[in-house]
Image (cartoon, rainbow, N blue to C red; front, top):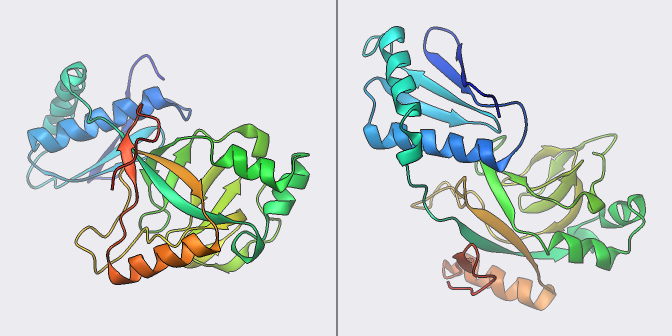
Length: 249
């Protein structure tokens, strides 16, 4: 993390606060705190904030607030961040069926790392992954914390269409495709859970700052969960981080 935050001009309607040049939980905590501070204080003229791994873009209306006034306000808020109490993170379990047609590249991942398929699954389901941000497609989670023992390069030739819900690995990252889209990640599994539903009261399932834990399921469990999803009665189990799987929901 930088010793001093960089404030960068991004056109005539946005300012970028850059906190560092790496992917780290420390930087992510500062981004979340600044986001909450802006939302809590309801700073006049700010129309939207967009977090990334290492920065926060603040969009504003120059008719409502001028650049110098906004800069001063943001710097004042940054000086008060230590007083911001971040919400306690929640771990959400994502039922995932691995291998076969659901994860056609899992054998490639295993072979690349000198592991068995079962070892890949065990490693992938053992961690809790921090949701750093959402984007690329609606609800797509950018996750941190994957064990590098299963890191695998992207496909040499990306697929033109990947089914929403597909769980993949690209380099040292893992993620879930939120909707049908092109992509070059190595597919190891699939979840029937909808990450994005335009008709739902809350269209996006995940929230930055929370965690995901993948839980292996078989075909029977998948069909049971799929039925509940279709009837609108399924809710992913979740628990406060640190309680080690004392699920609720």
